[in-house]
Length: 151
Image (cartoon, rainbow, N blue to C red; front, side, top):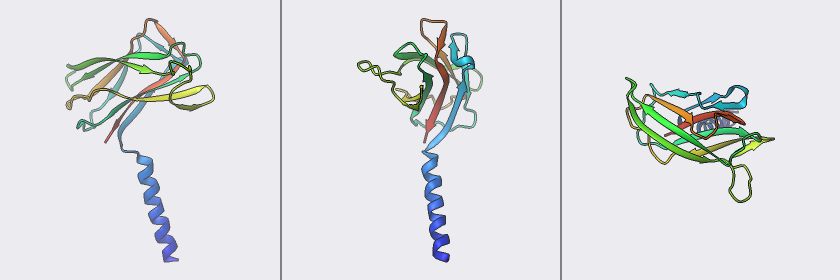
């Protein structure tokens, strides 16, 4: 009986470690009516997050109503007093250029695409703002947008 309890305890620890996937922070903002307006600023507060040149991921959850193959995002990082530390434009590819197949994982008509940002957030970043930077006031088909910071 002791061996069984011991094995179950080890299995529980392994499952817990596998589920954590090394993330320090992850948050999503859901879009009302599955549409992202050019006026919608998505702010992610990183007050308690230690940034030490770790990989940063951007995530876009989209569906079949999204009409483009990519999404341009403006990513603005600010310090605790609101001073802009960095302001970058990134292009997130959501569909394969040749086949038209959605990139990312999902089921039905909804997919989530994670992409690594080509830069690190400055260490004194306390908030990150995401803005859609397409040539259209509304982006139908965008269900949620988020960031993920890894260890």
